[in-house]
Image (cartoon, rainbow, N blue to C red; front, side, top):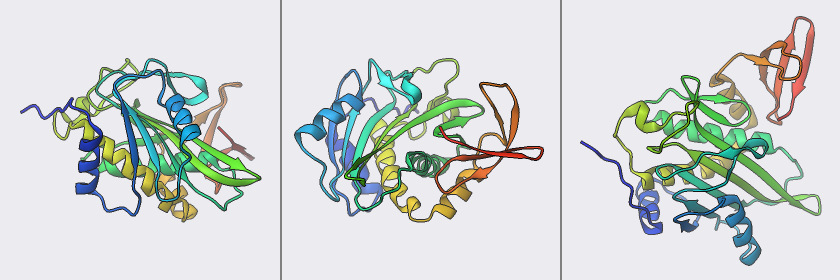
Length: 252
């Protein structure tokens, strides 16, 4: 039985979110049939209507022409995946730990995907892999004003039943047509973004759970080609590496 749902709609995402999750947040959602980048669309929306407390915003697109990934790379984002950029008002902190926030979203999304029986791993700093192939990517950004954190932003791309490049994998390839409703997975991503705020309140738990789900215990230095052992994740979300009697901390 084919359970894929191509129909998209803000109301359908709301309905799935309300049925499956309890939340004190009221999401403002926009859906684009096609756009260059949800990150650009989100910036434009924030400029017109600033984000309010407990009223985060999210822009979904059925497909993107120039989706943004880590380090400015283009993210392959055709119809059939969840492509979203979201912003949540978050005030008070002075800590600029975008890596930790990205890991919080990654872990929260892993928790949701594990519920359908998928063994998914985290490739530091913010990719989700299944059998070494990329299932999802996360782009975290923190915005400050006057030295104080004002806004958490995150872009998420999740392969559901879209075509993927050879280094990628989709949920459909892993579990078949079960739970292939695009609105369901859109609401799951929103819930993961909400859940990430809870995870940030307990850094020890967050870092420990991420360590348990790391894709590899080794890290290859791209500049030197040397292999380091991964010792853990520090409270800022950085990777702690060790090699013989040497130790270093790696930022994304």
